[in-house]
Image (cartoon, rainbow, N blue to C red; front, top):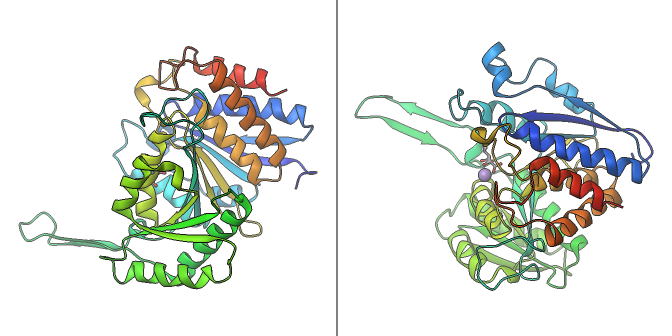
Length: 357
Ligand code: IPM
Ligand code: MN
């Protein structure tokens, strides 16, 4: 892939999504000329505005269009005039499910100069990765109402776990832990086996079985509630966490704030199979009230672009961006919170570009 043109679909999305996407693309352009690779970006106008105009979220042929690319980049979705859930389910979750992006990879790394709410902690203490299953669990949309709107109403929303779904995620997490090769070399399963005695029993048994194939990787287990406590108390104890979709959603917001918040946190929705298309995104939302103000931190989007390159055959370019970002946060920026960066969105993009060489 490294020798052919890297084909990317970019969905800038809603609110401030387009502004941060522009900075990520600016950095992509700069790194592509330094490392001499060709790329092509097709911009897609999917999101709230298009939905309000046309009633369509993913246009016909949209999934096949994405399948023809090496990777996708998503800015942010969420529009003040669209009811909650419509774009989330119709776009983000639809893409995760239909493209079978079964790994949600969320690195949690405190960069130099970035503030964490944890007193006395620095970059050496906060450097772990959450591997979140991304296609099952309470997210599968199975359920329904009975007697809706009456006093006897019943609502059912089911968590579905399959052997295939948890096994492929757990195996990928073991491989990743092995490759990451941190001195801890530990994969921690986070679940709730003491209460979810069916679904999480499947996870537990699968984890134990797959672990036998990885004698060089240490294993650990945390109940999800205890994990929330340990993550605050001893973040330095974690190396790689593997967990279910719903718990992964929750603990990665906690983890995200430990690394400085939504201005820096990025993630990848991976389909690691041959020919699979992965999608990378800053973790933050569309922050519509800040649209056009040049105040949103683009570092998260730039980090997402670094991940895209790392997972699409250009790991050196991804690492080059990581290094430039750490230089900028460590030496130039005041704080990573929105509006307090000391620079505007575009200026931060320029600083990263200048630090790439
Ligand atoms: C995330 C988000 C999504 C999720 C929402 C927007 C559907 O919170 O990527 O973590 O719950 O997965
Ligand atoms: Mn979330």
